[in-house]
Amino acid sequence: MKTIESMGFRRWTDVDTRFTQAVSSLVLHSHPERLEIQQAFWQQLPDMRLVLFELVDKKVRGSNVRSSMLAVYRPGIDLPEFRLFPHSTEFGDGRQADSIRKDMTRLLDFALEKFGERQIDFTGQPEAAERFTIIAPNEERARSLLTPERIQRLLSLPQGTVLQAGSDLILIGRLSPVPRTGSWEEILQEKVDVANQVAQILLF
Image (cartoon, rainbow, N blue to C red; front, side):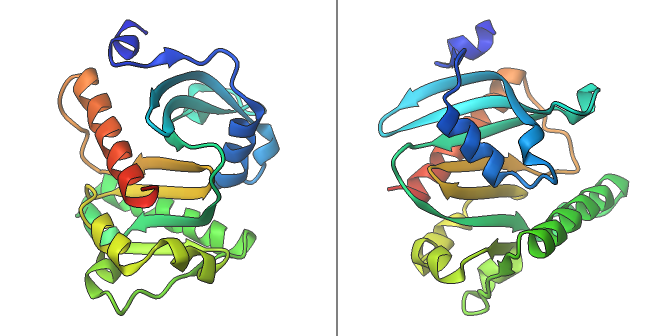
């Protein structure tokens, strides 16, 4: 708690309904109505808010159902919905890499089949096509945000970055078969830096 506060975050004791609904509608989950936000902290930045929080499935017991998440929250905007996943080639070899690939494939299949989303073709930008798989429920709306210039800037994100965006929210994650080294503060600062980078690319 003190570490988070020393980095400019404060506890969000009464998470607003709008944020909760945005998270529930965006996260890939078979029962979004069961999701609950716990342990939320926010940091106010110009024109947006960074939010650290735990997402919990209320119907399932055990710590393994908790997901630590980081979001860029900017009420009042209307981002087209899309999801960006890294290509499996970024994870290398080994058991952990194979596990990540399987989880990612499961999430992609879930989004494509249950949510009716479609993969966007970026063969015109081969470097992006080699690094990312981007899916969206409405390709035209997604492309209005994901211009060639923005796609090019997204290539600067760290390997393994996962983005899920829509409405006034961007969820940011990272998939890596190798545990990140460094102190907890350094790892958190790295996440915050990536969140700021994503916000500058997609919101400004």
